[in-house]
Image (cartoon, rainbow, N blue to C red; front, top):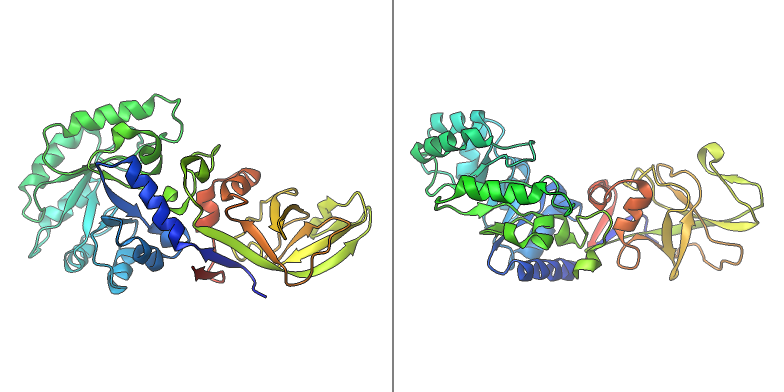
Length: 358
């Protein structure tokens, strides 16, 4: 009997990247594996995708160093760039590529004393207004980066969508047009599409796509599931039933007595809680699966346990497997019950969740 366990299906990872590559057949692929491979395990995900991805995108330098230490030799791109000029020797030694999105990074490159130039991706703010060089300063940045001996030539270009998961909004087409305008005639690689762009905006594919959540079989669109795009969930989140108890009509269950049964029923206690990353905000009625059927959360999520309404005629036994999300119970559906997104559920898993790779 196992407590909180995430079963990671590497075949699903391979399937999903094939789907994405088929949707962007003329583009190379940066596989985004930041945040511990979106909760699926940084190094195991990289190894599983090494034969299909052209490179890997990470958020932090520590992630990149960990990949190199684990034997990953494919190109690695720091999607947020470096945080300090002191990081630059490590980028050089580890053969890492970097985004540049602000004047501080540009000046650090100009002042650095490196033996080998770095591959740089100028990040342009085309409308998300989070990171990136504003359009009116792009020409100056291009000129200075091209003149900098610490920057490998040609210079590359990237940007990021703000609303690509909402296709009814016009801003995405505006971002594509602005990106094309600002990079016209530039010889370097160009990259704009992450998961939403890869799946639903073919004009945004350019030289590289940067799929993230879609690699793991999860839809970037809140109202849809990965299977709508032909994707397969790479994670099955499971635990075990550790008790079956009787509850009489009118009794409450759990902290605060939030849930009250309107009938005599059986309550299952499952070894998972917010200490494992299962969301404390999950309301009564959030589904789980046991023995091939759906049952509902009954009572507030505890640190180490949840309680579920098995029903009055249940024959479930201690030790039975409980599925919190997976192929038959999409994580996107759980996220909608909680009022969040699938990204948050899979990346919030804590270190005591056992990751098992199949």
